[in-house]
Length: 468
Image 1 (cartoon, one colour):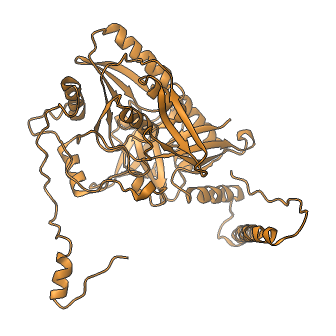
Image 2 (tube, one colour; image 1 turned 90 degrees about the horizontal axis):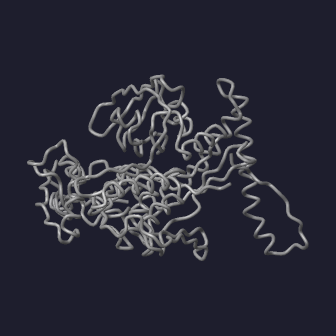
Image 3 (cartoon, rainbow, N blue to C red; image 1 turned 45 degrees about the vertical axis):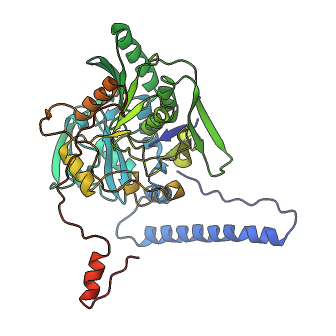
């Protein structure tokens, strides 16, 4: 059975078809195949040479699996090969229960990166953050390993400690000791936040919609005078497409939630909501940040486009692609995780690389606002070298001063983004909410205006440099 992931052994099929006649067209179509066969022969030659001449004995199976995974990850950051063990782990994770640390990770150029720690897991409690690099596990380097190999080192028996070496922007590498647990991810929970309901959705596994419906129904039953609802999707790394549709469906009275389009632009699959709003039309705000990815972006985009909710926080991660998990020999040979489509919000937006921009941009801290203004390292889909291109030449917004950041008088122990979401509900809309003064960034260096450096070079007898 295929599953569609958002986040998220291949076989070389060599065959000869029957030939009724020979023609120029048949000859032309055979040319690319001939090149493919030649390259496969080259692969065999390289494998044979490594087997005979490498300094130590090699494991053919591991070599071939690594080659397959390398082929797929060269396509985009989210395609890859899952060996049988990794495929089982992925199924456990989407079922919402597995053993480990509670991290959603990816790989970029051989480096393991944290997309997001999951709520209330060992990694979350240990302070691991989105955008962190994991360079070693228990003192052994994981640089150059595939994601599945690195994850395998991090998983193990509950109760055992694992030491991760973390590289983080603007800090020296440091070790974090984390004790493994059985991760029973409860992906949805609800509580009251003053006069407003607060629904937290931390991931999209097989139980998410059911958990969210139960949590919200219970909250409304206990609080019939609830005045609005905040849906918190911050640091939600995504997951299953059908669950993103399910969460969106909870708040939409029918109509389109999302569409996906594959290689053939005519091949469009649309997902629609059914009548019925679990929040009974209560005003809504969706909270997002740069750790909100994939399925989380589908929900935020759908509710924003359909004018069901306003979005507060920071621009989302920007993963606008869909992965299909294709079991090989029923999973006995693992599975192929292949990017097969882009998805589009109800208004037809592809947010690949660009993300969902909030209606009210709010930085979590003054330090975060400073980083955004100076364009220090910002982890997003656009930071992957081989990410799918954005459509129509669109680009993610560059360095800028966020609209809002916590003033000095704000209590640092409180959640500023959540506080502003409450303000939007209190005043009825983003437009009606009184705006705070824009934070003044303290630039690390003065950047000369365009052309100033070139003019200075020419006046000194030099030539302006060119970027190629």
